[in-house]
Length: 359
Image 1 (cartoon, rainbow, N blue to C red):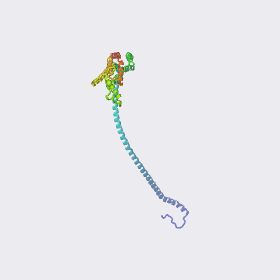
Image 2 (image 1 turned 180 degrees about the vertical axis):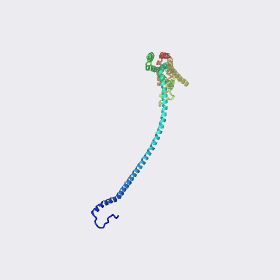
Image 3 (image 1 turned 90 degrees about the horizontal axis):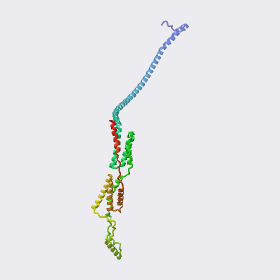
């Protein structure tokens, strides 16, 4: 400290001033360093505070974003659980349905196997079935002819048998087709007789018998005694002649002898007459069904005779019934129907030959 020059008011020398200038500058610089350090420290602290604040803001933002994403993830997880539960239920239902379908598939496979076996059995025996069907059609046609005389039904049965043979298309069955076609031509050549229409007309006559008037019901009634005295006025001579004419008419009776008088019948006799007439018509219908031409015509002739003798022929209903009986009597029902046994024997011989060949 003693080395420091004292300011005595005197100007130092120039050399001394030049030597102390660097030291002063160094001292100034040294005095500025703490301030700079403090500034740098303050800047570093501010920078650290700003970074800390910024990091904290980012962390908070990240926390909020993370919380939001966690909430979204939780929601998605719940939805996924719900969807997974629905998927499990759907899978369970699908498995149940799949089991039902598998059982039905197994059942259908069993049915298919059974159908295949049945088809193979039918395919092996289709010829036998065809022969049996043709024979049955021929038997039906023969029965319709022999029992009912139904030519139309017999034609339909024969045509069905011929169509079945045509579908089979077997050359070895040509003989059977010829026999059936021959029977078809014979049936088509027969005259047509409407047995059903004739039977219906007889039934209508049976129904109308009860309403037909008898001849005795239309006998003219005698004139009342007081009828001649009416309308005469006061003319005595006119009344006298009318009374005389009435007396004369009672004494003399004019009758046509060429036509017999209608017989008088008691109520019980009239009832039995109607019933017997019905029985005659029923007998004619039975004879028609039996193709008995003799009995058919005899019953119709007796019915016509009774109708002309006991019933009023001037009545329109009676005249119409008489005309219907005459037309029915003139109808010819005696038609010789062909026998189809030849065709039946042919198809049976084919079946027997096939059975022998199969053995």
